[in-house]
Image (cartoon, rainbow, N blue to C red):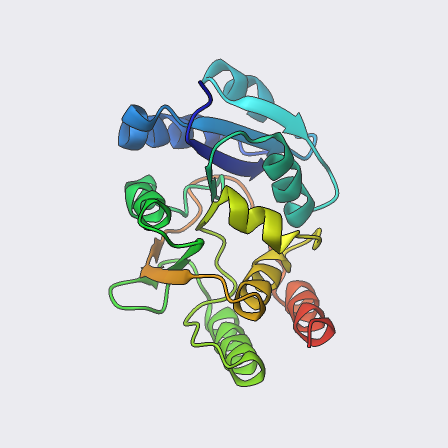
Length: 222
């Protein structure tokens, strides 16, 4: 019988993080027997070898984070799908809350760094201000009440993902999800989440480039 939970993890040169992440995921939700899907952007290090050795299913996509997540959705079998970063910034200890939100009837559950006890050890002042601007802009345009729209730690029902029909191939995919979920009237829950600093390796986010991508996603969905 297929697992009820699929976890989709985009990777690119994450050999210093992936084994520890997969071990922690299985430790936290071993009873759920999660299907772990790594979508790799053709890493030049041992990311793929380590992922396979730790039981993950590995697929390939090199077009961007969004494209990798979409590929992972298409390959996943779970009735609940979780998006998770590979750099250990997302705490596996929060997985149960993301999963239980969908089990209790929500379509989408979004981690928020700016809600309640949420927070971040990683976000710079410029990125924080950019996030606040985009949150204000989306809430103003769409009448939503989001507290975080650029954070990628999220869970979904299978039905919700089919309705969302995601298309953004880059870092704008989180913004696309937030906008479409509101426009479609999906049942969305935000929960506090704490973002840790990347454990090893080099981050791929570029504030100016990705900020312009996010702005374009907001404007084209009006």
